[in-house]
Length: 379
Image (cartoon, rainbow, N blue to C red; front, side, top):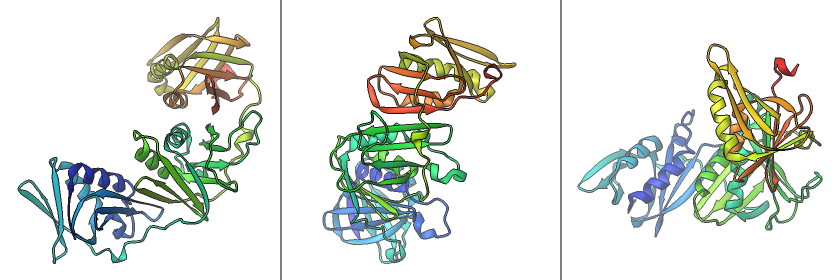
């Protein structure tokens, strides 16, 4: 095998597939990247047995063939190479000569025979939608997944299609994530869903990598196929496949409050900055931060003994009960404000220890539910 390509092409390809490579495994071969040189391009693949990826890069192929190279070592080399043409040539002793300028590396390779092939999900439920819609749906939900393996079913994002069972929701596509302390739900009405409805749980890792691949690029169609216990995504020359999480996702419809007593509208950026400043103090007290509505303003306060206190005051438009007081983990508030795109945000509070609701003004397709924290003041 022998080919030449631009350093930027090679680095982009290697850095993308390397993220899928298993760092710890009892099967050492999956710590490698598979290179397959065809007539006019080179395909790069990685497979950690839970998720796999393949993509193609432009190259001048002198000799077709395939080989395996250690992902971590190769990534370290490629990232340090100078800009310009890079050559890769497989020698008879299975070393690969990587040439650049007047210099070169020699890197040991492995034969590709035992490398696990990526599953090809060809038949099943097919969804086609624009990448910018999917990226937004991922970004506005994925931060709410659980990081605990004890709640394995919550380490993914639920994707469901079909008519919503919630009043006022006219969507046919929804993504929902929760860690038990907060819940994010993003809805959309799209074409290209095909026949039949689904409700599946996609691992957060797969969606994170998919969003990185698509983000910043011009919107293009993404083809999603669900079959059995697997899901695949086809975006341009990139193919990503993942196992689905098996289990029963919580009924999110039971979590969303039916009504609220206080509705506060305020500037998104102002609330985010205030919450971030309060977090500096709150970090010493389990991130507990009080949000109090009074006098047409919202006070964001935090207090940590032996450290100090903060009282952020923000102008707000208040409807309903003009006095309300509730405490939240401030990190759960800044997380959602970071992904909101609207100029103004709506915060809805109920009585006692009812969950808080956060929405984007003028956007009925996104809702965020956050559980309050019981404090001495709330007792």
